[in-house]
Image (cartoon, rainbow, N blue to C red; front, side):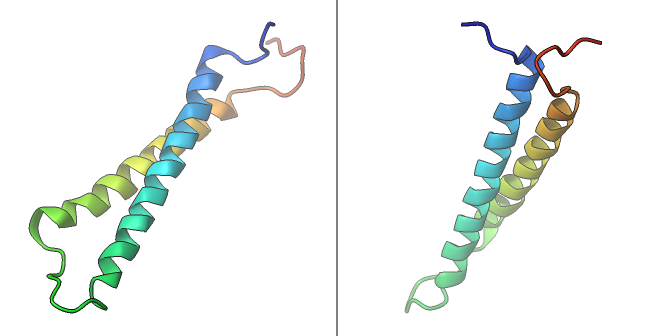
Length: 82
Protein backbone atom coordinates (compact mmCIF):
# COMPACT_ATOMS: atom_id res chain seq x y z
CA UNK A 1 0.00 0.00 0.00
CA UNK A 2 1.43 3.35 -1.00
CA UNK A 3 1.16 6.16 1.52
CA UNK A 4 0.32 9.71 0.63
CA UNK A 5 2.73 11.25 3.16
CA UNK A 6 6.27 12.32 2.45
CA UNK A 7 9.19 11.57 4.75
CA UNK A 8 9.34 15.04 6.29
CA UNK A 9 5.62 14.86 7.07
CA UNK A 10 6.18 11.61 8.99
CA UNK A 11 8.99 13.32 10.89
CA UNK A 12 6.72 16.28 11.60
CA UNK A 13 3.96 14.07 12.96
CA UNK A 14 6.45 12.22 15.14
CA UNK A 15 7.87 15.50 16.47
CA UNK A 16 4.39 16.78 17.34
CA UNK A 17 3.59 13.53 19.17
CA UNK A 18 6.94 13.47 21.01
CA UNK A 19 6.71 17.16 21.92
CA UNK A 20 3.21 16.81 23.34
CA UNK A 21 4.33 13.72 25.28
CA UNK A 22 7.32 15.58 26.78
CA UNK A 23 5.10 18.53 27.79
CA UNK A 24 2.66 16.05 29.37
CA UNK A 25 5.50 14.44 31.33
CA UNK A 26 6.59 17.89 32.46
CA UNK A 27 3.08 18.67 33.71
CA UNK A 28 2.96 15.32 35.49
CA UNK A 29 6.32 16.00 37.17
CA UNK A 30 5.17 19.47 38.19
CA UNK A 31 2.05 18.06 39.82
CA UNK A 32 4.08 15.43 41.66
CA UNK A 33 6.46 18.10 42.94
CA UNK A 34 3.54 20.29 44.01
CA UNK A 35 1.95 17.41 45.94
CA UNK A 36 5.14 16.86 47.94
CA UNK A 37 4.05 19.80 50.08
CA UNK A 38 1.01 17.82 51.21
CA UNK A 39 3.06 14.88 52.43
CA UNK A 40 4.71 15.01 55.82
CA UNK A 41 8.50 14.76 56.16
CA UNK A 42 9.22 14.72 52.43
CA UNK A 43 11.86 17.19 51.26
CA UNK A 44 10.91 19.67 48.56
CA UNK A 45 12.66 19.61 45.21
CA UNK A 46 15.99 21.39 44.99
CA UNK A 47 19.26 21.31 43.13
CA UNK A 48 19.37 19.04 40.10
CA UNK A 49 15.70 18.14 40.41
CA UNK A 50 14.85 21.69 39.39
CA UNK A 51 16.49 21.10 36.00
CA UNK A 52 13.81 18.56 35.13
CA UNK A 53 11.18 21.22 34.47
CA UNK A 54 13.02 23.34 31.87
CA UNK A 55 14.25 20.19 30.15
CA UNK A 56 10.77 18.69 29.76
CA UNK A 57 8.94 21.91 28.95
CA UNK A 58 11.71 23.40 26.80
CA UNK A 59 12.42 20.32 24.69
CA UNK A 60 8.70 19.54 24.45
CA UNK A 61 7.87 23.01 23.16
CA UNK A 62 10.80 22.92 20.75
CA UNK A 63 9.80 19.54 19.31
CA UNK A 64 6.17 20.65 19.07
CA UNK A 65 7.12 23.83 17.18
CA UNK A 66 9.50 22.02 14.80
CA UNK A 67 6.86 19.38 14.11
CA UNK A 68 4.26 22.01 13.30
CA UNK A 69 6.69 23.67 10.90
CA UNK A 70 7.27 20.36 9.11
CA UNK A 71 3.54 19.66 8.84
CA UNK A 72 2.71 23.18 7.62
CA UNK A 73 4.64 22.41 4.42
CA UNK A 74 2.09 19.70 3.53
CA UNK A 75 -0.56 20.44 0.95
CA UNK A 76 -4.03 18.92 1.40
CA UNK A 77 -5.49 16.40 -1.03
CA UNK A 78 -4.36 13.37 -2.98
CA UNK A 79 -2.73 15.04 -5.97
CA UNK A 80 -0.28 17.20 -4.05
CA UNK A 81 2.13 18.48 -6.63
CA UNK A 82 4.10 21.70 -6.68
